[in-house]
Amino acid sequence: MTATDTHRAIEAVWRIEQAKLVASLARQVRDVGLAEEFAQEALVAALKRWPETGVPEKPGAWLMATAKRRAIDHFRRNKLIDRKHAELGHEIETEEDPVAGLEAALDDHVGDDLLSLIFTACHPILSAEARAALTLKLLGGLTTGEIARAFLVPEPTVAQRIVRAKKTLAEANIPFEVPRGEEMAERLGSVLAVIYLIFNEGYSATAGDHWTRPQLCDEALRLGRIMAELAPAEPEVHGLVALMEIQASRIGARIDRNGEPILLPDQDRSRWNRLLINRGLAALERAERLGGGRGFYVLQAAIAACHARAASADDTDWTRIAGLYAVLGAEAPSPVIELNRAVAVSMAEGPAAGLEIVDRLVGDKALKTYHFLPSVRGDFLARLGRFDEARGEFEQAAALTQNAREKTLLTERAQSCARGEMPDR
Image 1: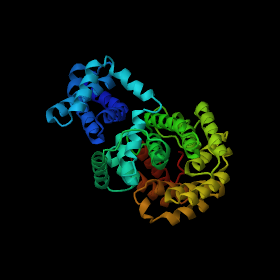
Image 2 (image 1 turned 135 degrees about the horizontal axis):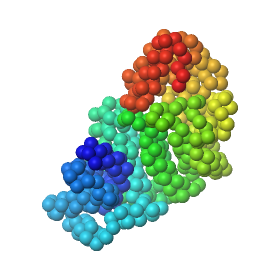
Image 3 (image 1 turned 60 degrees about the horizontal axis):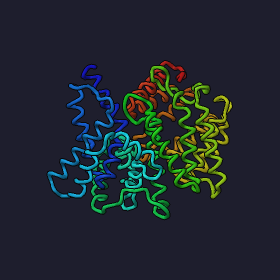
């Protein structure tokens, strides 16, 4: 294995193991910031060691053991928390298989370290923006730049939010646990929002060379299913699970053999995962049976179900989807939801009707750097035969996106318009 191959392997291992490392360490040292530091030190050690020795057979266990040793060194050197030092020292000396211990913790339906980390990071002592930024950094593995783009805010703002959030949690000595009763209900909305943000980053990566990150979708689904067991009477929990199950069913059909994006109308629906669709539809039925009105996630799951039930793109009930988006917009007003409604309206009534809605969103500060706005507007203009205007919109969208695959797709669409041709994908 070359040095380049080794570094790629380390990057892949890190993306998979980072959240588990931080969560497990945070449970032991009771400090999210320190846990992240120890995990980072283990990564640095791997970058120095593995190019010489090769990637170990159990890289996750290696990283965990190294991080624990860093933690022991830290507490021993500073002599600040003798009790924790003793606990960590005992654990690492007696633990024959660190992976077994880690997996046992992850399989515990209540004591799940990752879920405990989410609930800790979503404590009401933090602002909603800080909760989301911290959890995406720790569990989603996103950089501050990626989080900044997801929330359409400057990168230094996100960095400050994360630093302050970790400091606030440490100073308040927030328990590292999954709360019950009223405490769980109080944090439920934030936890669901973060799980969905993690899923979305896996479904459409904001940056990088790959359009999707399936492992993030899998992790979000796993956490959502655990939440459904912990809060079985909450319709929004089942709505979120339904939404993610149905969306995840399309992951394999969203890219071709070369990793290039395939848009929804062009996807081979025989490649959609029917098991996940059936699980999603069942979760949606469960949410609707619980009553209490359709909330944000139940409504989005109902929209996803419309796509899942259509035998082909032409069979899609766009009128019903547009109506559901209208209800969703009334429930949770947002320019992004209005943009999605414009797409549905354009499919039901034609591109001119969609363009009329989108034109009202141009100039909205929240969408200033959101590449989907010019991308959608470009699509409507192209379908109306206004290729020169469409080309400019696709070029603007390509300049705004940070995802390499998406940039290529949008550039190709602009080039088609420059030739006076309707983009073929």
